[in-house]
Image 1 (tube, rainbow, N blue to C red):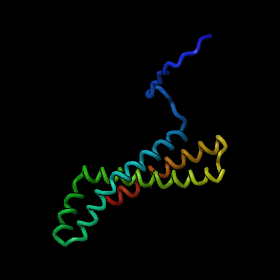
Image 2 (image 1 turned 135 degrees about the horizontal axis):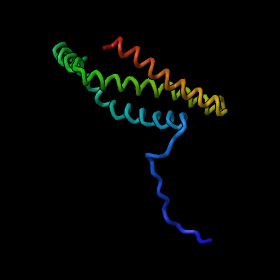
Image 3 (image 1 turned 90 degrees about the horizontal axis):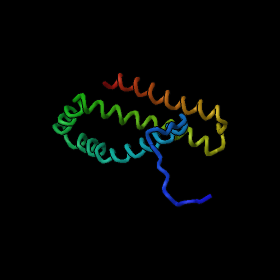
Image 4 (image 1 turned 120 degrees about the vertical axis):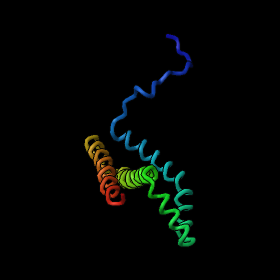
Amino acid sequence: MRTTNRPIFLDIISIRLPIPGIVSILHRISGVLLFISLPLLLWLLAGTLDNAAAFESYRAFVAHPLVKIGLIGLLWAYLHHFFAGIRFLFLDAHKGLALNTARTTAKTVMALALICTAILGVWLW
């Protein structure tokens, strides 16, 4: 049999990850999203602390529905990153490594992040 060093074509779209893998990838994506959005959030914070007129202009900016949807997306990213980070801390301590436990905790992370985002999103809207 002949071996070749040809690259293997992996169709990323057709690969089906298990739920713990999806939680892991979303944890990384949410971390990058939070890191990238940090300058914007700090700019908004600094502007609101500047003076009353700037505060009112930022308040009007945040009142726009698209901005609210974006901020709710950032809220989801923060909550998912938080809950998944706690899950990964337990995994680092070798707790919850069994397959059923890993699946259950991954589903719990997804559910908690979505439920908390929905509750806080409705409350903040």
